[in-house]
Structure formats: C-alpha cells, structure tokens
Image (cartoon, rainbow, N blue to C red; front, side, top):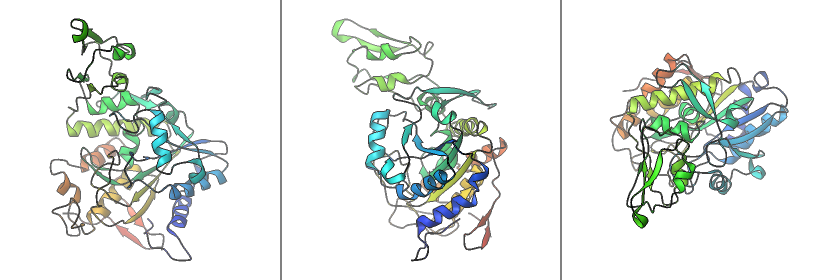
Length: 377
C-alpha cells in the first residue's frame, strides 16, 4: 500500500510506479504481449474515477517492458453515455483517457454494440459458460485498475466487480442481473420494429393493428443477448433487475473466475481508495466521499486486495456531510450503514471458496511498516 502523502521528493504518481514495480510485471508479461488495462472510464458527469495521469504511470512501465498496453472497458447494459462504443469512447476521451494523456490507445473490448463476445467455460454453481468481451479474453495479459467505492448491489465495487461485471459482454451483464427476459414498455414503444431485426432468437414480434402495433417479447424464445435494449431508440425495452442479491454476487464472482482462469499468472491488480463515493461510477454524478481518500493498493490476489480495501474504509472515520448517516466511528461497517440489506462479505467468501484468492492478508506500506487485518464492528 501507498498512502497519498507527497513532497518534492516523491509524488503520488511516483508511488503508483513504485507499487506497480513491486508486482514484478516482468515476471508476468513478455515483450510484444498485448496487455489490457481494465478500467472504469466513468459515466459522463462522474468525476470520482481514477485520474488518467495515474494510469499513465502503469502504461509507461508496461511500455518499458516492450509490451503493447491498451486501456479498455465494456459497454453498459443500461442505456447511458457508455452503452455503445461510439458514445463510450467519446465519454472516455472527455474524462481524459486519451492516448495523449495516458500513453495508450483505448479499445472498447466488446465492440461497437456490445456483442463482440466469447464463451468462456467456468465450473460455477450458476454459470457454466460466461459471455466475456472478446478483446479482454484474447489479450495476453490483464492489469486490473479499480476505483474502490460503494455499490447498491454488491455493497462495494472493487477488483472482483471490475473483472466480473466489467469484463462481461452485454449478454453476460444481463445474465448476472436478471434471470428472465427484458420487458417492453407499451407507453414508450412506437411499433417501429427495429428490435425485431436485432433479436437473435426471433423472440420479438409486433402485435396489434396498424399504428397501434407494439413489440412483444416471447420469453421462451429469448436467448438473453440483450441486443434489443440497445436497438430500441425509444428506450422502451427494459431490463428486469430481478436477480436476488446473493445470487447476483455469486454470478459476478463466477464471471470474474472465467476471466482470470484464462489469464492464470498474467493478471495484476491495483486499487485506488480515493474519492470513495457511495455509489458506482456508472452514475452521471459523484456524491461526497464517505471516508477520506486513503491510498493505493497493489496485489496479485483479487480477493485479498478487495478485503484490504474494505477493511481500510471501515477502519476510517466517516464523513459527516456524506450520505453516511451512521457507523461514523473508526472500525464500524460503512457499507452496511449505506446498504443495510447487503452482506458485502458474501462476494469475498464466495470468491475464496472458488479458490480465486484469500481474504487473509498482510498490508505492507511502501515505507516498510506492516499491518494485519483490522477489527470491524
């Protein structure tokens, strides 16, 4: 871990370089490797995302190893400023993730419409074939750079969510969030038929007379590709967010396993505990952080890095002017205070049970001191 203190001799950006070096990337990547740097570029209007200047330090280190790094993310399931590659790239550039600033090109890993996908086998309880963005799956290596923050379904979003949800294609995202087909809003549907053209399973048809025609989805024929959601320019086709929270977390972790199993020793993790907003960076705004910015973590273990980040947040005093209205003291559970019905430890325990890593860790400061896991109430 590196804290965020800085002086003329050592900037925070320099600490990013030092942390990345401690992961010994030369042992994991070879010259000419195509290395995906998995980020969240932030929705348009969001300002809590990781600063591009910090990402530049990772890029520079990878270039020194003669690898070919590129910044990447996948299109969103919901309709927003990152729902297809044109808007996604525009948003990324507007937020500063350009080649001029970061030193690396940006590639949207699941393609123009979110359907550039590969099926990856995983021996999960819920998922047997995960739908992974093709350009992440096909990359030689992976550097997962995560912004740690709250999340209304997972309790927090860290490395596991960045990989599990963030590396899935649109079809994979739908599988994690829902176990039934999308639905059509009759108020918004204008009966144009565009969705029927894109429906891979032939599950959508127009019903009704003349101008009163509306799209209808046959759940039995729906293959869950979610392409109709993007195809509808009226926003009339909606996700039914019906999956239970524990099962959602388990699916998310199984997707993360599908991505990382393919990369084995070719995956590194960095997490920024900065601007810890109460909600995900998918929102078009950033609310006040719930705790002070704490520092940056680096690890080879996605479970340990998430556990450490969560513990550090919980061990910190709460921000009294944030959405956090209780659990303000050091050592109290900030995520349970934000989302009382969500057991955020479930994603960590499930990932550990799948053999993806360990919740136990030793925190080593760049200055040489060490700390063990703090107690949380």
